[in-house]
Length: 172
Image (cartoon, rainbow, N blue to C red; front, side, top):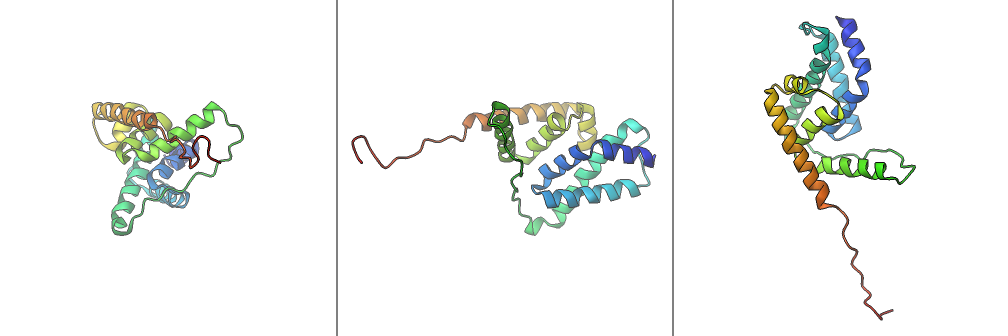
């Protein structure tokens, strides 16, 4: 079964890191969280009964490790998001849309951000997300609906504001 865990870790490494990054808000904290998750997964004595459940089980370990760490550091926790250092080569609509969504995700409630990350970005099915979060599948569906509406509301608010000018017509 250890081989199945290692295979799942390799297969979902980028998604795990992305999820950790969204939970923690910084690359360094995400790396630490992911390392903690890997250690816990590989040293666990209680493994999922079937190989299909391994993926959701690992994401659950990651989420629970983050919750434990958050609770330990609650008094001095600072939720400062470090900007992602991705070079923008082309200013096309896809890049602008990706930036807009990323910025909007940072502005919605954490519970909404988490459900969007699991379903829309990590690609989990509703049943898998229900297992990860420990809630009924119907709750996942309703949270996702509210999260998407919240995300759309933030995006529709827009962040383009008119520039104030000091010059009026005719002034130089």
